[in-house]
Picture (cartoon, rainbow over the protein chains, first blue to last red):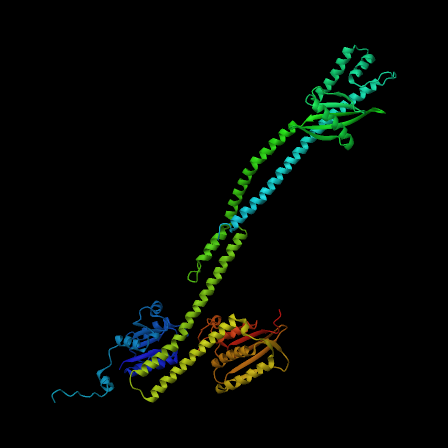
Length: 138
Length: 495
């Protein structure tokens, strides 16, 4: 089970991405600000973090550093409404960059690239019932 | 611009015309004055000669009138005879003596080139200069008669192409005997001098004119150059590149003033455009987040079959975000109107105290949920201020919304009204955590978020409304001890 942490001040964003990722089989935690983030990153194991750098306290850069120190193995993906080029200028060295306007599909692909695909056990659970095709010549 | 419409050309034409007129006037004056002076010189000479001759005649005649009345003299020839008798000279000697005298006088006063005629009261020519041509003699006699009538001693006579200046004087040595002396002097020197002067003027004037106009145009070119630069710079300015400036002329004159004012205007425009562009960027991003959510919810919901509840949840989320965007857009339009369209506010006199009481009532209801206490210091009284009630209501609503949001449950909000001679100040103080000193200068900035779910425009709108009412809005946060917002409004819109 892959743990993903979504850090974003917008409740709507947290909601829709949580839905999306839980749907895909990831375990999702969310945090709305620095405090909530701190409570999670120092106590839990997270595999991937989606970090909104336009948090009200504008601590995007500092948050990035702190998270990197706290969870060195985790992949951090920067997210924002600003274009990717702009994000790259602000924060260097992140595992990936996501422009929210690109949509959920793009986010999924980005995450899949950085994490292993979910374990077979879950896949079995999620695939719908298949009808076994009849062979010819029956 | 056609070449004939330029200021340069107009200045040139104007300058040339004025200069021509001045130069013509000047040369006319010079010529007139010199003419007058030259004539006066001749006249003075003539006057002296005339006096000498008059004295001579006078003496001659008096000599004649000697106790022996038998002699009647009518000519200088006879006079000489008399002198002979009187002075016991021989006739030849007397004639010579007289002639010598006359010659001496002529010499002394340069009579050589002059003509003279002496006439007695009966119109008979008594004597005349030897060199007088007969026709001239006749004219001179006529002139004498004419001069008698007009009593003007000096006159000018034109014969053929020559000019003569005449002086006519009357001598009355004894009662009953008058003689008229006329001397004519050639005006050739005057004519020559005037001629010379005239031609000098005719040639020099155009040359001077051309030189002056040329240097004048050079000068005006130089002065008008900055105008050209300003025009060129203005032409190169566009919203894409407001960084151009016109080079300053360092001449400390009106041109430098113009150039500096122009550059300062560009500076302000650049800043304004910067602000607008910043604002647009903010707006775009402010709206992108709700759109990202809407898109996300829709895509996620459509990925597979969902339950009715899940669909409903997605649609409700999208509706919330849509409402949020509409609110943001409405707020921005309000901000634009209040800031830039003064007509959008309708002012009337409102009773401030009852207005505030009304707001407090509504706020108390909203604050009930968090059990926040709201107190005030309002006393009964008629305080009238000019205001647009709807917008003013919005101002106070926004401030209270802020206060309520940041005041912890069971906290306190105070409203304090202070009246001064020309203003009314309302302070709304809350017991929340206050505003960090680093944030204080920015809280009225557009899209400055401090709380999730808002759009960061509340206080910007409040400030814009306060300004539109010719008032001010300030915030203080004494050492983390809550925040205090003070709205100051004028009691009258007349200064």
